[in-house]
Length: 104
Length: 210
Image (cartoon, rainbow over all chains, first blue to last red; front, side, top):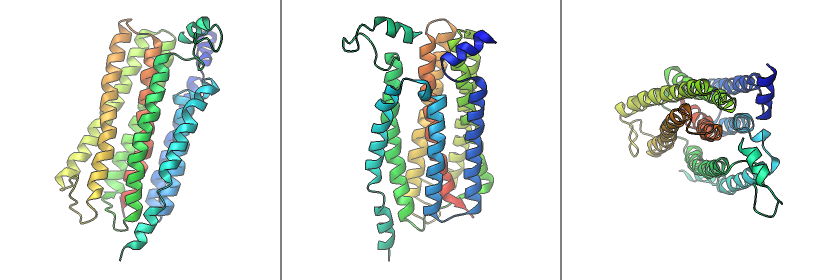
């Protein structure tokens, strides 16, 4: 056990931790399907689904992709630029509501 | 480990002798590819969400049973394959070649099950008359374009991932590659899973038929 555990911790995370992350990912997926089952308006649904999916993405990146256990510099290299670019794309998004009201 | 090698060659931070991120260049390369590929999918999903919100008469062809149940099962297969991939990477770091190959094969099976279920569903929708520029249910034709475009690009990624993992499993089993190669292929596989975490709710759960 000792050799195995120390090896696993050197690379960040134990089997038990990864199984728990997986359980959470499946549970959040279940919540998303349940939300679809009880029916919301598209705008509310989209907001909730994006919120839950961002949580899932954060879990996958942090634990499965090990970013939480890497040097902080790698996080600064990758994530802020990605988030910034996504925000720039999102600048145009509210226009979709305008397009909605332009319809006869 | 490559980390230690990197540290050993580090003379001063500014001499260019080492990595400021303490990871190998393959891993850094894969991370940078993932960021650019993430932006490709973001652009597609953002464009899709835009037309989804701007069209109140959007087509909603997926009933909870069987379409949403089937795609939920696909999600569970893909998530499960991510967990087996984590186990494979851990086995590779222990230098347990046999276990690594077994876990990688399990991961490939998860990916293949995903592709089979997805192909079954595509076949069903094509049979109903859905085309990239033709909507048999009378809604916007963009439904087919976005559905086939986004899920098709994702399925291509899964298919490439299965082939990639096959090559890595074969090479690692024969002692050709290091545990870092397994870890880098794992990064790619988790990313494919991550993209599906956005495709599944946005494409399927936003088009549920009540």
